Picture 1 (cartoon, rainbow, N blue to C red):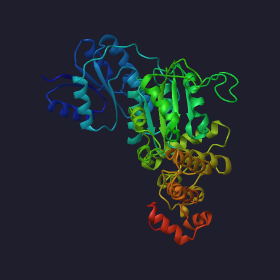
Picture 2 (cartoon, rainbow, N blue to C red; picture 1 turned 120 degrees about the horizontal axis):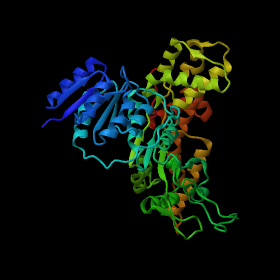
Picture 3 (cartoon, rainbow, N blue to C red; picture 1 turned 180 degrees about the horizontal axis):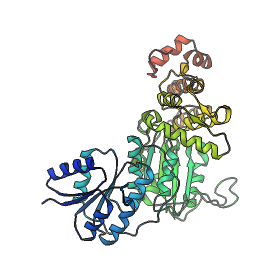
Picture 4 (tube, helix red, strand yellow; picture 1 turned 60 degrees about the vertical axis):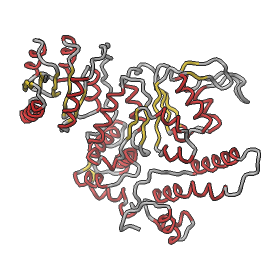
Length: 479
C-alpha cells in the first residue's frame, strides 16, 4: 500500500509536480503552502513522510524540524531548499532531516530518496548535536558543490575515514575542517600534517611521536600528531608523498586501532578520525609501486572529489565577492568587479583554482586605485595570450624533483640489496620526472612554449616533440 506524504512548499508548481510524481507511485499526497498547516497535520498524527521547503511565508522549515522530531521522532523528513549552501545542508541534517536536496532538484533522485526514506528501518534515536553557527566555510551553489555539501552532511556524524582528492588550490583542507567542525568530534582538536613538507626520515616521529633516546638527538619524549589529535581529527595532507615505511605503520594503525611511538613498546590507542587528501593520482602511484594498494583501500572508505574551479564557473562571482570582502576586512581597499570583469573571470581556466582566484582578488585590492575593477585590468592580470596549456594536474618544484630523485635511488638500491644494481637508473629517473618537469615549466610560463624551451635549455622543436611524445595537452591554436 502507498504511504501518506505531506508536502509543504509555497511554490504551487513544485507542489503539483511532486503530487503527480508521487501519486503515480501509489502514494496519497497532501499539499500545503505554509508551515502552520504542515504542523497541524503532523501534530494530529497524519502522514508517513514529510517533504518540506525551507523558506515559507509563515515559518522557516528548518525551525520546524526539531518540533516535529519532539512529537514524532520516527517521522522521516526530506528538506528541499533554493538556499543551497553547506550550512543549509548541515543544519537540515543536524536537526534531524533524513535527506537534503537542493533546488532545482532532479525528480528521479527525489523519488529515489522518498522510496529509501519509506523503506529504510528507523535507526535508534540519538541526542541532537549542538547547533552550529560558524561562518560559511565553503562558497558556491553549483551542482558540483551541492554534491560536496551533501557528502559532508552525510559524513559529519560518522567516524569513517575520508579521502579527499582534487587539484592543488581546490580547498581540500577547507573540506577536512568542515568535516571536523560540523562533526561529532568538533570539541576535539583538528591537527594537520603535510607529508610533502616533512623530511622522509622524520615522518614516523612526527606522526607517532618518539621516546627519549629513540635516536640521536631525541633528548626527551615527544608527542606525535596522532596523540595531539586525540579525540579529534587528524588531517593527512598530500598522503601520496608518504614514504613506504610510514605507509606500513599507518596501515597497521588503521587495521589495529593502535600504534607505538618510535622507540616505544607500549601500544597507544588511536582515538582519532582520519581524513586524508592528495592532488596526485594514487592509482598511478600504486601501479608504480610507490603507494600501498591495501593502504589506499583503508583510506578511501568515503571518497570526496573536489572539482577544479573551471568545472564550476558559476561559483566565481560569489567567490570573488567573498574574497574582496575578506580583503577589505583585513584592511585592504574595498573593490567591486563590474559585469564584464566577472564574465572574463568566468572564461579563464584557473590553473591555480580557488587559491589563484583569491590571490588575484587580493592583488586587485592592493595594487589598483580604482574602486570598480573593469575587464581591462583583468585582461592585464590574466595575460590571456600566454595561457596555452590545459591545467596540469601534476606539478613539480626543485624540492619535489630532488625528493623524487632521492626516492628512486633509495628504492633502486633496496630492490637490488646484496647485489650490484643493474644499469638503467638514469633512464628510469628521467622517465619519471621529465613529464612533470615540462608540465610545471609550461604552467609557470602560462603555456608559452618559447619561454618554456628557453627555461629548459631545449630547442623549441625538441620541446614540441617531447610534448607530443609525452602526451602533454595544449590548447589548439596557441603555441
